[in-house]
Length: 392
Image 1 (cartoon, rainbow, N blue to C red):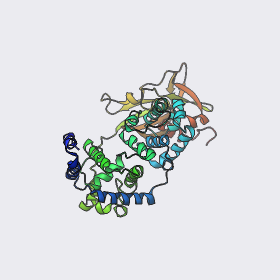
Image 2 (image 1 turned 90 degrees about the vertical axis):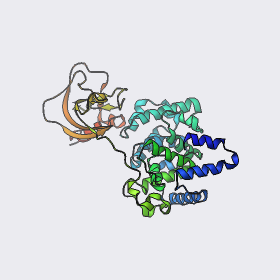
Image 3 (image 1 turned 45 degrees about the horizontal axis):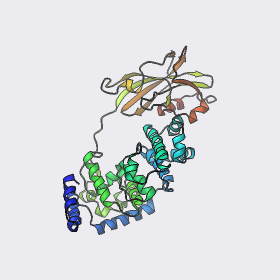
Image 4 (image 1 turned 120 degrees about the vertical axis):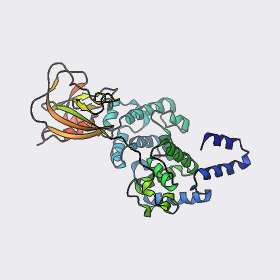
């Protein structure tokens, strides 16, 4: 709702303020149901959720820390992938204090394979603030929650509503899609305008009771029924009131965001082995994936160098001192996507001579299971016929 309209309503006499809010919201959102109808829609959606919700481990707890962990992991990652990571992470770090006291390398090792490692660092930073300022608990007020590192409006709303039962709204990609179609909002997915409209609607519709279930029901509807493609409108509990369905525009809304094509990059990786050990390189803290380990890697070409982050921004252009590639056939080739790059990688046999940098270290195969390895390194090692030792 525009700030000027909000201020006008705030100055209005109490007796007519409610009618003004109703009139304005109805004009902004013609499909907005009346309070009585909204209550019926909530009942219908909550009943559907009770009968169809997936049995996920973070839905079996009201512990705010555990829910925070799940929300951090679920950002940009599929639910099926997160389940096992979530269980392992909570087994190692069952509360905020244990996470706050952990070594970063141990946290990153348990996060390895989920990607977007900044989430892990922010989660640990949030745990430290929870310990030092909130006795190890997630704060129960939105303002304090938003002060935690990595906690934005969505995450705060999720934890406060699900763990504490507070009437806090939330909007994620699923909720945006449900609202865009249900209310017929003709906006671009992820655009500031559409997201703002969805937040206004979310705050208008969130119930005083069962807010956590309501929020999860909206997200579940977007994940299972109102999906980006192959929408199952016949099974939707809200189908009779859906504006996009009435107009035959379900597949059009929200309008897709135009994405820039991925830039091509070529890299070489070295496989350097001494008996049962291989040599790995730790990425610098200032880089993307900082702190993780990789096979020694150099970039040999990239589109758009000099236009911001070219090849040198992701990988060095020279081998670390004392390392080099041997003559002979490649050990393997692979493709990998990271950030906005589409990477073609060659895995070459390598040698290590003379003095090596402090970012290099030797590891045995069994150590790699608990090491924070980049996904590309894991993919490369998985493709080798004679690694780990003892395999054909």
